[in-house]
Length: 195
Image 1 (cartoon, rainbow, N blue to C red):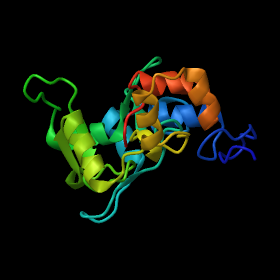
Image 2 (cartoon, rainbow, N blue to C red):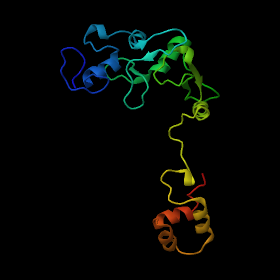
Image 3 (cartoon, rainbow, N blue to C red):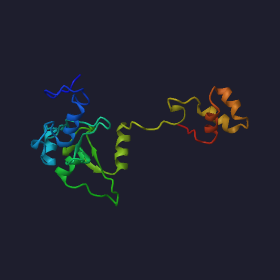
Image 4 (cartoon, one colour):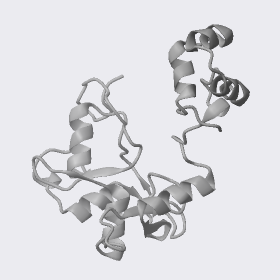
């Protein structure tokens, strides 16, 4: 498992490349060293786009290991990074403005493909719009399940109701239901919510 760049031989890190080549690709848009890597941000952007038909997804070739989104360095030695789909929006539609004084506008994917940079698939909205879209499409990963619908729940709604209506000590209920006293205390303090 070595880097796919010819002649490198270093250990593979991400996307088949070693960390040096992968980071250089993200930062400059090419794995090559030297003057050829000093291209404009837009030129480096297009090097990483798998451009297809006008209505198809244009996939970004180098995704972030952490978020799964495409990223590219803005340029320079200690450059900050920008999400590829945000850069695509800026290139094709202009600067990302503000909505009702909200500065954190997001670029949303109509196609739900994190790697897509096709401007026809990108729309501007607030984070609340993005969350509503995720919920409507059932794509929200970190939706918090409550009550007995939570996969780690040891208590159900009837048990919690009995605990709350009783004046028996937490140790009694902990023994009765086979849970910790802290779980009973949490249920009593209304931290436990119905699903």
